Length: 137
Image (cartoon, rainbow, N blue to C red; front, side, top):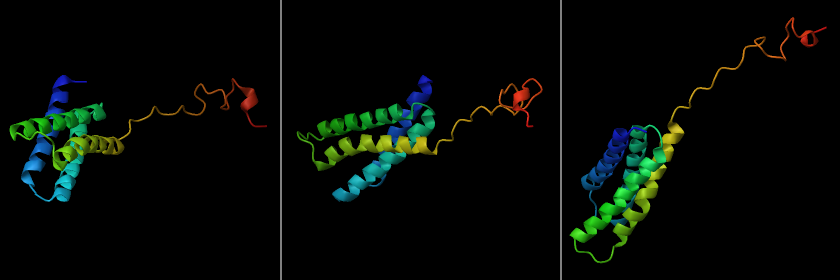
């Protein structure tokens, strides 16, 4: 696992979710939560795409940053108790990020398997002069 790639993946994912939350402001709670969840899924997918391997831990790191930055924003606004929106961001955001990474894993091309042995090449079941019992009669 390349540390620079890890840092780039996590920071890109967090920057993406932060940009989505800032570019589409809304005061309607249901729309705000929907925007957060969809943005976190996209951010988790992009994070996993950049990470290349160990996708879920990278997305979990983005989710952890979302939780930390939610608490930082609450402190800056001098909010003593989280509102429903802060709870939704800290609760749904990390899970949605990992769902995005899981979607990336589902769309990731499978590694190619080793080709199967050719008939007759060191295969005891194949018909060969060395194995007369396998020849048809």
